[in-house]
Length: 583
Ligand code: G6P
Ligand code: ZN
Image (tube, rainbow, N blue to C red; front, side, top):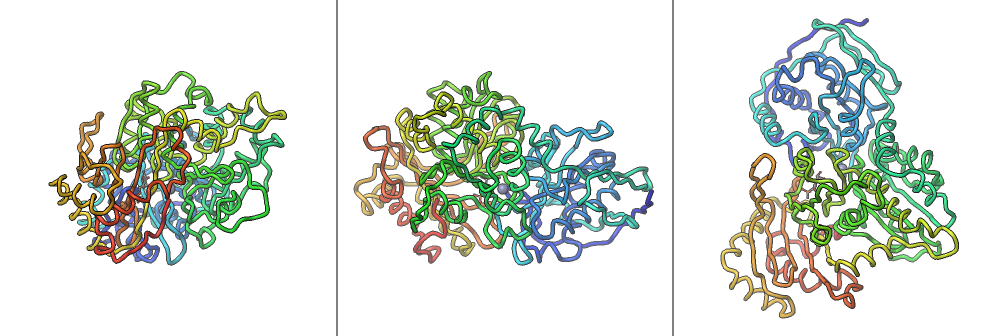
């Protein structure tokens, strides 16, 4: 057994190591500065405390983006020096964010041990490569992101750090080969366990969904399917699940080879960035001769996000979670006993609220960020939840789950077509959504993103909107001057949330303008960007009249969008006459 020693290395703090909504995300060149990653990792160990770190089993892996392999070796050596007993690594350092959550909760090591937490190496949907983003976040024993109490402590530690511990004499570990390698340190044995990235996750999915009925759908000649991993880590799961387990044709996989730079693309599953899939599904402006598949889906870099498409049809994430909730009990065995409750983030449309009311389910509106759902789930209050930002999931883990969402939709399709794989026309994704609107009404919804705007300008815009809220009369006067065909604002505030489980209060979670007819305008600053500021504008309008639910959403929302742009003085504060991305 190779022996290692522990050495303490002197260091000085770096500015700006504050973990955002989902960990610390910076350009690779920032992370590559000597001691930058080391400072953050040691600050995390110190925040957890020696009693939690010594003897622990920790997972270290991620979406495989550029710099991950170097980072994994550094973290292994630091973990060994800090007294960690065992490090689990997905083969080649690949594990999706949902798979890590599953591994923490489900996997049992060769010696019977369970994981205590994980370092997830990802910047999610941000591009990767030497000039792009890297990221690191810590997840806890429940499989969910560290709560603010811990991330605040980490940040405080980064400001005062003076030394970090690293193992000397511990060689780089081969993470491409499955197996356990053991080393001997001053406190005893230290193991690195490299395991298959997909098996634990596949096992969990099989315990949730009826794979047989999904397979029947996927192998039916009437059904066609396409999955785009955007060269993220989802590719490592897509082949195993959709092709090997469920019988889809290999040609239905697009960009499913994980790449360090995501093939130069932006691994965010939306109508702008998932270009190839969007074209295949018949949704791009240039019409193709080919018949689009019946169902299409995409994932982001770390496979926690999803986009669901039908043939020439886009399902908004807000509708997606509402439709999953409405059908879960019938279509998904895991939920056959009923739903404990449902939840959405504040900017997500109220489509889920209507389902909750109809089905008499507990309902929660939480701030943006998955951790708020995790608390509800740990307390047994929520089964299904989702966000407008292409995140959908359930209490099977404590992260959102891109492949789970696809399997949920395939389950609903399989259920709706269970007696219908003969001659009749397939009940399509579009049919399911339109039926849902006919039952519950439609929430027209769009999001405008103004990316990488000047941070000062963005702050001023937000301050301006908060100030306006002090007089609704004034607001309504301005609005009537812009468009006379929108209803009155009856309430306006900054969203604040009191967690029903731990009583913690989260303030300044987005600026809301609520209209008399149920429409909403929401303004928020993104918490996940790595450069400048990103302003998000969320626009929503509820339509109950079934004769009016078939309109184009951009057209239906145009009056509210115009009001939002002018009321916020978007162009004056940001210099932008158009958003970067519309979803
Ligand atoms: C991450 C979180 C999500 C959240 C999203 C918001 O993906 O996991 O829970 O909805 O960030 O991003 P934003 O850029 O809007 O802060
Ligand atoms: Zn992600």
